[in-house]
Length: 117
Image 1: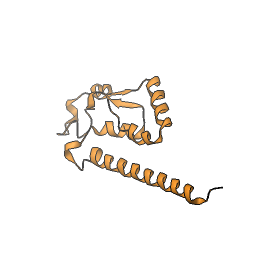
Image 2: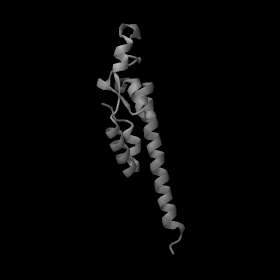
Image 3: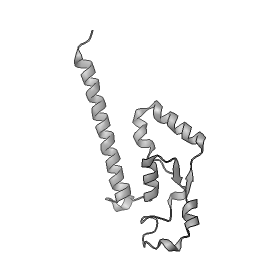
Image 4: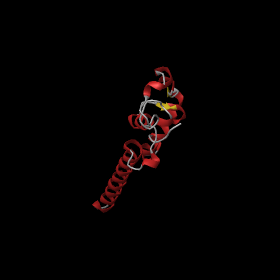
């Protein structure tokens, strides 16, 4: 029976990997949602939909309802119907495929939420 060495080493490897994933996700949130680096800001709704795993996406990268998509904050210039059309639900088959991919590789779970259409 092997000693605790190999188990402890594997436990520490997983711990370090998870910590790196958490840091990466936090940096992504700061950069893309909060806008720490203004050049890389993306549609706020698209970023949040990914983190919340709502199985919805912003089509075309513009939701017409956040400060990135409407920098002058004049939201009234876009009708509510246009804002509703900007967000669509993924097909159940697509959701099932993404869940299958995510469950097959734990390293992908953090990165799948960053996908956009």
